[in-house]
Image (cartoon, rainbow, N blue to C red; front, side, top):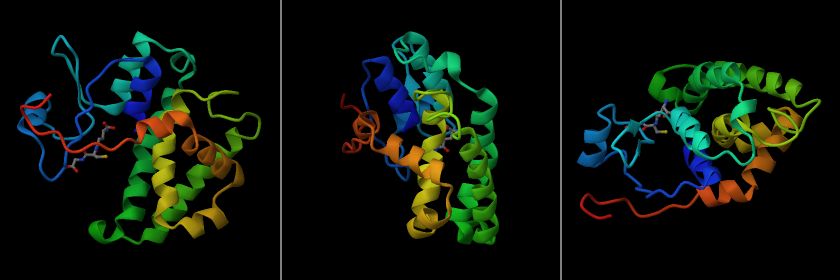
Length: 187
Ligand SMILES: N[C@@H](CCC(=O)N[C@@H](CS)C(=O)NCC(=O)O)C(=O)O
């Protein structure tokens, strides 16, 4: 989602190829053998296969809302690392054979840090949305979705409001489009 949102924000013209993770197209694996999405293939053949790198690339082309200069790499790295770790174990506790509540609590503690930042600004990077908001909120949205009622009752208020605003944005709505899986050979 964050890669798509940055591509949309940058106005980049791109072909969106939806893939089924259980049936990855050979063309995707040829471009990026690690087999994770998203994968961006540039016209010169360069492959960018980390979502943060796709955001960086897209915004380096065009960044009308000044997301890049306000990006906070340490915050983004922390949520890509520790928060994602706890999110996965909270969401898929059975798969990891762990106690989900331990990871829910750890994730919640990290949301308290975001809440603190949001005390004096509407978004993580300032008064308007920026790189960090777009990089982080899809994870927070997933976290909120595991137990909606629990999140509504326990997550910090500013984080809930921040999340609701980003989810309600036109940019997110545009990025949410679902298309039929791409079949190799089509364009
Ligand atoms: N750090 C990577 C993580 C990408 C990632 O793990 N993507 C998941 C889907 S959200 C995936 O492709 N998993 C491979 C699979 O499930 O086979 C990024 O943000 O680009």
